[in-house]
Image 1 (cartoon, rainbow, N blue to C red):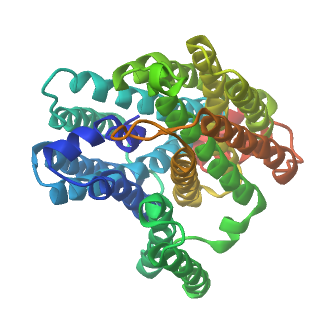
Image 2 (tube, rainbow, N blue to C red):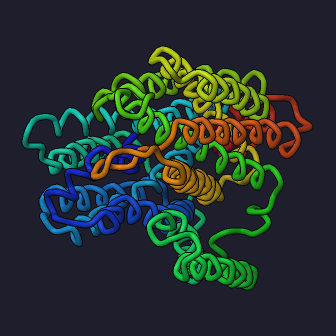
Length: 472
């Protein structure tokens, strides 16, 4: 929950930060970009570090960094130091793959799909909770954004205490050297890829900085592949990375991340449009947009993840992912053709929330079933990054789409997007879910019984004594 909160916590308060710190739009956008880039760099590195040196110790270290970053963000009045704090908060994204590795090591194989689904479901819930919390804490005539970061401090401290007292120490650790060169080249690749995606609207999509960053990402990708193929103990086993189930699950993660964030940002903007001026929208405040229109989606995701875990156990992760994506197609089709009433927007969002919960329940199970136990952290870390990349792309696509066609308004009034741009954005997100269906049914092939892959791979990480007990 804390992981996803760090991604969306600042979205409702960017305007307040900009006014209080007297910053420009381009400068304040780094408050979100810094976290995205930090997550891209640290998640695979710390996921692998947890595999090698113990999950609990790594979790505690990550949470300590996050607490420090949250305190810095809550106390500073400097944009520079606020961005530094957000970089430290970005490391929290590594908590998710580390948590899944802990589950694989500690939970009985029969209960593993449901446990992973529950943890995955809190990702969607955390996003909604962050929006509601930020809206409530900045109400009134004199809003103070520092309160929002103190909320992050409190939740991070609770999470740290929970890990310290309740999570057992890792029984297995592969040891070995940390592949710093592989981590550096992968980090450079992800930064060069995500930086122009997140800043392209501000820089210009055909500017030298944007095109140069994409070219640099292509070069760094080649450097990273060569580096990992020659290192004795690579951070990412390239065979694992290109293994068909893992590859297509990561592709599904990218598409799911795109669709989820497209719904979040699209609905958020749509419902805040002033109907008396734009001719559509509901004139909602940030708080009302979060509580009335977005929170139901996250609540359905949290509850639906439990059913997703049951389906993973009974039908298999591949079928569950495909079924969830079908719900996503239905939800976005509904949102595309009927977003004139609050009931339609909320109802479609709840269907999409169910789709997201099934996807979150299925993808960790697919990853766990496809890699050995000592690669769980890095494999789930890469999958987390694929979703982050999808979210960044969605933000860039929707923002650019909404700015491309605007309504002519009297001089001095801010430009508002045409309603057709929202329709196109929702249709694109629905197409992303349709591709997830294809990826699930065609790309991810399974020749085993539904429950066998997850249980077999999970069982490999159990101790002989536990296996013997389960056998008896």
